[in-house]
Length: 179
Image (cartoon, rainbow, N blue to C red; front, side, top):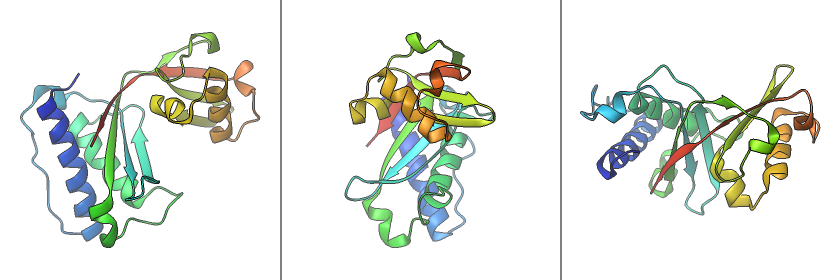
């Protein structure tokens, strides 16, 4: 668990990273934010929403060799410019963006009956295809576990129900930090 100050720092890092990337200012963030909890390597996703609350970008690393604050810098910049579902964020959009950061626990293998919608994020894989959904997605959409697993299949480009056989299911939790 991150302290309120650490949460604020991570959000500030995400905002600064997006601003720097979009405006191409070349600014750099501090090499060490001064909080031990932020020095631990961790997977993270940064999600951007536009001024109407619609998804504007989301990129992350399930596992990261980077310190958590560095992971947030990278994922925020990539969410703004590299999400293939969206055009890059423009300078005019910066003021209207809201940020959500999900710091991930380690992955662990799980059987389908162990998955808890709203608690677990899921990484489902089969035959070189992978689909990942963060824990909060099931809650936002009111999904039960079966719908969550089917949505992971869809995201992976697999037939619905593929999670019932021959798919590898891994779960994780996330600490969600948002504005």
